[in-house]
Every structure is written in structure tokens, then in C-alpha cells.
Length: 378
Ligand SMILES: *[C@@H]1O[C@H](CO)[C@@H](O)[C@H](O)[C@H]1NC(C)=O
Image 1: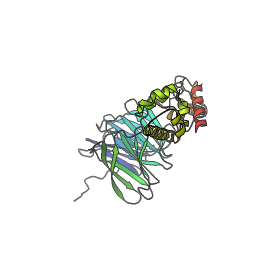
Image 2 (image 1 turned 120 degrees about the horizontal axis):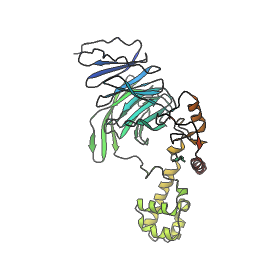
Image 3 (image 1 turned 90 degrees about the vertical axis):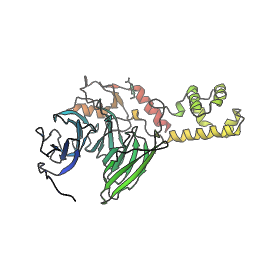
Image 4 (image 1 turned 30 degrees about the vertical axis):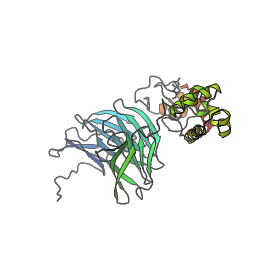
């Protein structure tokens, strides 16, 4: 049996979302506000409504501890509110100012995600409120997202019907095309995490415009994303002899290090390696030669379809930079987009949200050269 105990009518326009914490219920609306109620008697709290967004609010969520309430809006920002006082503790801007449709906080409140109408997803470090990354994840609007219960993965759902599983470095792990005809509307993961050998498993519910709710079992090897050592590994063509030797060690081919050293094999030579040249090197074992060639092929194909390295993309436009410049916050941006940003009313860093001490821009020549080299290698 179901019976209505309360009907709340305070919002002046369409309601777009609601969320519970242990003590509170929050709602958000196209009327640009959030309202907060006590779950004891559904009375509205004295500091409610919360205003601050410039346009309609699409989504609201509590942190697991209940201390923070998050909201995101067509105005391109996520506001972090204190659940105790209703004060806005932080405002995080999407670097491209794109309307935000959905936000989610990791179970341990370490990361914050927001999905945008332009198909990008922004990921912030929640404790220090700095942008970690903003990348395109779809051609369609991102309207649904949630973290896995372990916080290592997240799921996105889009208006073209796709559901995708990512790791927190934005490596795409799984994609379910047309999960919902006409588009995904929302998704949520169950709090229980299963462990089966080295796989983590959790249940996901997705709702769609096709009037269906689907329950999925998502199974993923832990730490399955390609983890390259350090920040970004150069292309094989730029490898030194030492890089090649390090790679041999990592691939379990240490017995070849001596031969490679003696023949001064560097990256360009490694990428030219074939059956004949491998035989010429004096690698006696056919099995070992075969393993070397297979690993070399795998390495080349892995790198040839490699995506644009993060640091080559402008954090504002998420496009490959042509004329990268360093701003006062120490981050590099495409000249045109950061100039437009600074000319606007914002004198804050698009990455850290802190005030920019100066509007001076310095060309990042080494980055520009690296981008040119990378482009010619593609
Ligand atoms: C140039 O950009 C790269 C990549 O973002 C960065 O690592 C480097 O520190 C920048 N150079 C300077 C002088 O800031």
C-alpha cells in the first residue's frame, strides 16, 4: 500500500530533481532555486530556498555524509552548499560554460562529476575544488552519471541512448550503444559491491525515454584501464635507447636487453622491427623473436590509435591547442579561448577558480613543439 503523506508545493516552476540525506530532503527546480526540508516533519528549513543559480537547476545530490548539497544548472556551474547553514561553500564552473545537466559525487567525496549538454564531462577533485579533467564523452548531451560503489569507475548516460563505463582517468571500459531507445534519462548504481576474483561487480539501474527501466550487472577487472607510467609516455618514435630497454623489462623481455644495447636500438628502430631485422640482430630463439614481434606490433597499434594526450588539449575548449599560452595559474590554454575568458567578467582561473594575479599570458613553446611533433607523427 502506498499513501501520500505530504505534497510540497513551494516551487514556482517544474521540479527537476530531489535527493535525501539522513535528515533532509532537497528539491531543485527550473525556478532557479533549491528547497530543503526536514525529513522529520517535511517542514521547510529557515534558510530555504537556496538561490544563486542564474538559470534552472537540473540536479541535486547530497554527499554520503550529508554535510554537502550539490546542485548543477544551465548556468554552467555546480554549487556546493552547506547542509547546515545553506551557504554556498564553492562554485565550480564548467570550463566551457556549457549547461550542466547532471552531477554526482564519489562515495568517499573525493571526486565530483558534472555532465554537460555539449557531451563533455567535467571531473573535479572535491576536497580542493580543482578541475582534474574535462573531456568529450559523447556527441549527445550527458544527462545521467553515477559512480560505482567503489568509486573507481563511473557511468555516463546520454540523450542518444548510450551507456558508458569509464575509469577515473577517462579510459572508456565498456560501451552499451542504444541502451535505451530515444535516450537515457537517469542512472544509479546499487551500493553493494561484489568481488569475484579480480573482477568488481555492481548493479546499475538505468531509466530511459523508452519508458523502460533496465537493471545491469556491470563487471570490470579492477585497475583495468591502461595505466601508463608517469603522466604521459612519449610515442615510440621519440623513445631513447633507455626507453626501449625499460619497455623490454616491463614486457618480460629482459633477456634481449644485451642485444638491444649492443645494437643501439632506439624508438624509431624498434618501430621498424620486422622478421628479417629481428633475425639479423642474432636472436636465436624463434619463440623469443615471435614474442618480440607480437609485443612490438601491440605497442604500435596501441599508440597509433592513441587519443590526443591530455596536456595537448585546451581545458576550456577540450580541443587540440594551436597556440598554447601559460596563464597566471600555471596552466596552459589555447590563446584565443583564455583571452576571451579573461575579457569576460571572470578574472578567475578556469582550473582552480582562484583569482588570477595577472592577465599576462606567456607562450608555452615546449608544449607547442610537442604538439607539432605529435601531429606530424599521426
Ligand atoms: C607547458 O605545458 C606543459 C604541459 O601542460 C607543462 O607541463 C609545462 O610546465 C608548461 N611549461 C611551462 C613553462 O609552464
